[in-house]
Amino acid sequence: MEKAMHQAHNTSYAEYSRRLDTRLEVEQKRQREFEMTQKMHAQVDRQLHK
Image 1: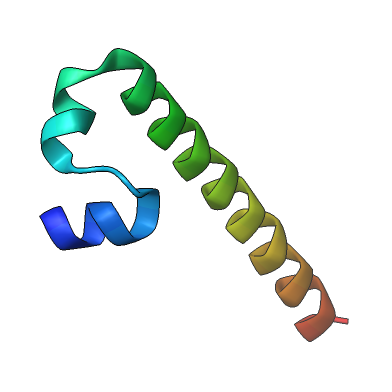
Image 2: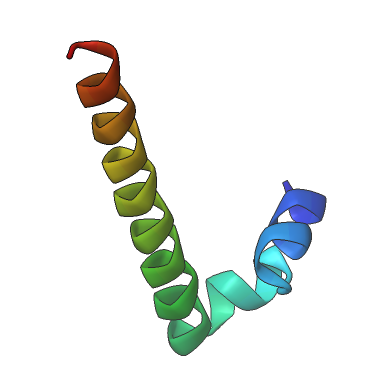
């Protein structure tokens, strides 16, 4: 988990747990990535069901 956290967000899990500002940044990035993925999925679905 530590390695994945560092690769994806350039921060350690300990820092993520300790610092609220870091945690908020990581969670905002995750939310943006999730929304982007949902939009891409919806576009693919629309194209497949034409």
